[in-house]
Image (cartoon, rainbow, N blue to C red; front, top):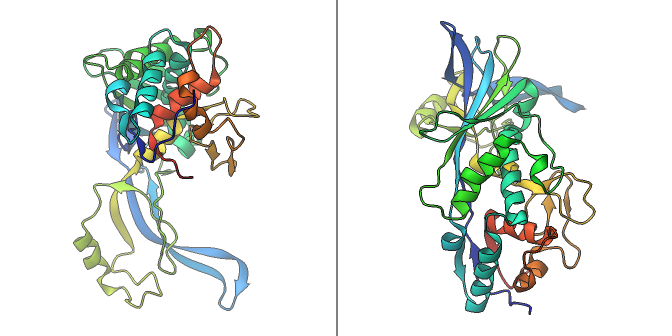
Length: 356
C-alpha cells in the first residue's frame, strides 16, 4: 500500500559532525607537535585571461591558508557520532500514518544483521577512515587517519587507501572499518546506551619541511567588492571591530577592495566546514540507475555537483517514489539497494513535503 507524502515531513540528520580544525605538524625534541594553520588576507597580482583597457594585470585581495615554515605535514581533526534513529530521526510529520510507516521501516531495517543497514554503516566507516573528507588536501602527501573513542587506548586506523565499495559482504571491509561501523555508527543509530563518539584525525605528511598552502572550506560570498577574490572558512576569527580598525583607510565607495593599513591580516584558524566533512562521509550511493560503481553523495534525487546531474530523476528511483512504498519494503536474503538508499536518506535527514 502506498503511503501519502505529507505536507510537512522533517527528518533530523542522524549524524553530528564538528568542524575540522587544521593544524601544522612540526617536530620538536623528537616529538610531533601541532600549530594552528592561520588564514591570512593579503594582496596578489594575478593576470587576466584577455587584455582589457589597463592591460592584463589583475590585482586582487584574497585569503590563503599555509602551514608554518617548519611544518612536516598537516593535521585535520573533528568529532563524530550518530543519534538514535527510532527516537530522533522523525522530527515533524503532519500525517500520523506516514510517521508510523516510516517508524515501522526503521524498526525493520535499523537492526544488527540486517545487511542493508550494516552496509550503510560500513560505508560511512570507510569514508571516515579513508580520509575522503580531506578533499584537495589528500594530494599534498601520504595520508593516515585515526578515529579514537574517548577512554579507549587503541584507535581505529587506516592508511587512507581504501576508497571504493566492492560489494555487500563483510569480506570487502577491514577489521577496523567493521569495528568502527558496529561500535560507533550502528550503536548510536540503534540507541545503544552509552554509545560513543569518535575523535577523528587525518594526517598528511609532505615528505619535506616547509610552508605549504592547504585548502580549508571556501565561504559563499554573493556580493564581493571589486578586486576581492576569495574568502576562506575559519574559526577563532578576528573581532569585527579590530578588522574594521585595520581597514580604516579603505575606500568606502564600494567599488574597490580597499587600501589596507596592513599588507597581511591574520583572519583566524583555518577549518573544514562540518557540512563539507559530512558531504564527503555520506558519499556512499552507488545504487543509483546507471551506476558504474562511482559513489555520489546521498541526496533525495541523486544530485551530484561533480557530474552536474540528477542521477535519480527516473520514475521509481528518487525519494518521493521510494518513500511512498516504504511500507512494502521488507528485509530479505537478497540485498535491496532501494532499502539501503532509504536507510542512508533517513540518516542524511532533510525536509520533505507534498510539493515539488
